[in-house]
Length: 382
Figure 1 (cartoon, one colour):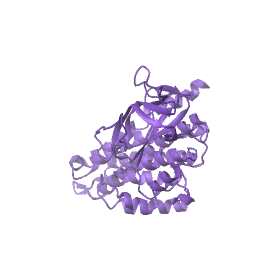
Figure 2 (cartoon, rainbow, N blue to C red):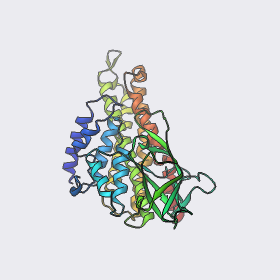
Figure 3 (cartoon, rainbow, N blue to C red):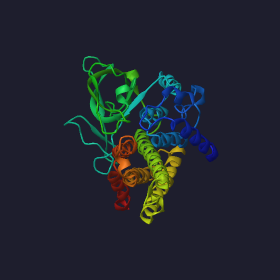
Figure 4 (cartoon, helix red, strand yellow):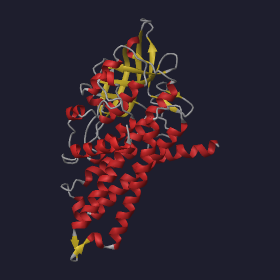
C-alpha cells in the first residue's frame, strides 16, 4: 500500500478508536468489520493482502487510544506466526477465522529481556534449550512418548504471554525431538496445560503464564516453519518488538497532543501556561522525542514489511525503534502528568492509563537496556 493509503487508514482508525474513553475495550467485531484483523491475511482467506506496515498503523492507533484488545497476541504475533509456517490442514482455516474475528490467538515466545542477547533464563535444569547463535531460548520442548511412538508430550513454560488467558488457540514455540524449532498448536483446555493470568499495573493488557507438564499432542499439532527456523523465530521477536514500539509511539503522541491542548487553555496569573518559557521548552522536548521515535518506528516497520527475515539490518532497526520509542513514551507520559499539574494526578484526567501502558510497554518484548546491549554487540563483533 502507498503512504497515502496508510494515512487514510490512520485517520479512520483514529476517528473510530478515539470515540471511546482511554482504557476502554476495543470492539473486536468492529475491528474485524474494518478489515484490521486480516490485514496480513491473504485475500483468498478473507484477508486484505497488506503488509506489516499497515498492521503497524493500527498498533500505533490502539496505543494512542490506550485501547484494550487482543490485537498484539492475535494479529501481530498470531497471524505473523501462521504466515511463516508451512501450509498444513487447519492453518488456512485459522487465518480465515482471525480475519473474520472468530478466533483469538496467543503466541508463546521468549520475552527478550535477560542479558542483551534477547534470551530467557532456563526454567529448570532440563526445561529449555538454546536456539540460534544469539543465545535465545525456546520455552517449550517436545518429547516422544515411550509407550506411544506416534504421540508426543509437551513440557516447559513461558511467562507474560499476551492474551493467552482468552485465546482459543495457543501457538507455543518449542523444539521437536530432533532439536528443530517448531510451533505446537494446542487448545487451552488440554490436560497438563495451565494458563494462569498474571495481573499487571496496566489494566489494558492481559498477560498470562503458560505452563505445559506432559501435555499430550499429536504429530498433526506440530507445525513447521516454511523457511529456516532460526530466522523465522528471530523475525517473530522483531515483530513483537516493533509492534510494542508502535504502541508506545501512539501513547507518546496522545500525551503530547493532550499536553499542548491543556497548556493552551489552562491559565495561571491571568495567562495560558503555554506562554511560559519553561512550559514551551518542556513541550518542545516532548515533540523532539515523539518525532525521533516516529522515524525509528517507521523505518523498522518498513523493513519488516519488506519480508526479509534473514536480513540482520531488520533486527537492528527493530532494536533501535524498541529501545528509543518505549523509553520516550514513559518520559513523555511522565512529563504530561507533570505539566497537567494537580489535574494530571486525578483519575478523571486519564493520564495514568497512558503512563501505566507506557511503563509496561517498556518491559514487553525486551527492555530498552536489553535492546541497547544487543545493538552494542555489533561493535564488539566488529
